[in-house]
Image (spheres, protein in one colour):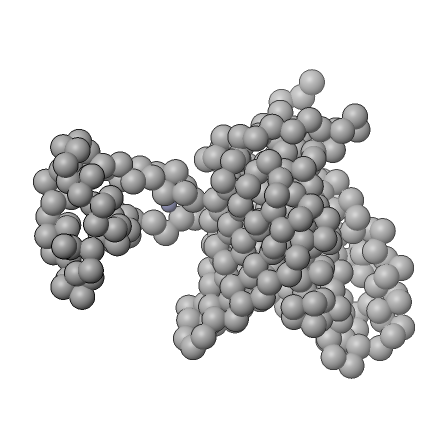
Length: 308
Ligand SMILES: [Zn+2]
């Protein structure tokens, strides 16, 4: 057996934005292999959880990079009835973070080694996408899960909620704690797209089905040039993707201050350090009883309903 590192194709995680046929269709293609490995390590995830995270991170990266506003963000929540419980990704441009309710839930892989993503996510439930443009009301789109495999669920979301005919493929190739490859593709027909272009894209759909295997040993550009040969491929931009949490001690202090009166009384009475753990990066922030008392003491009066 080779050294595992030699097996992993070494291109950094990134997203390519492209158009086809003079803008009749747009394409996003991303690699999220390292992101997914880091997320799996942080959450000590089972193989099924890792496969689900790889797919969800890929779809979320594409949604996040579609938001043009610099202050914008996207929050994607998958709340299904599977073993993994609720999964949430928050993206700001190419920066992503992920939390999973039960990341250690184990599910057996199929005989061919396919991870049971639908069993982990659940076949019933909701996919919610909140796009915050940094000002004004956020856009909220909610659709029902249709398969739990995530690719079809996101295709349903784009088609129903954003009313854009879309082809989505997501994949993650992983086993025994190692992510070999993860990524995804989104192809959208723009208004005025000719039928012949849509038919041509449908003919090429089998290329994308095994996307994680395709991404395993080829660069994003190589794949795009191969898949979209003869379709006037125009690569507009390449965005780096990273797993990064923006939590801080101040943010945790704010969360502590927003607790209800009973919880606060319990914490104040316990006399022990209070440890707040971030759901996304699992970092722990420790507050001594004195620090907690000081935090509660500066509580502004308008929150006074909890102070009787
Ligand atoms: Zn964090």
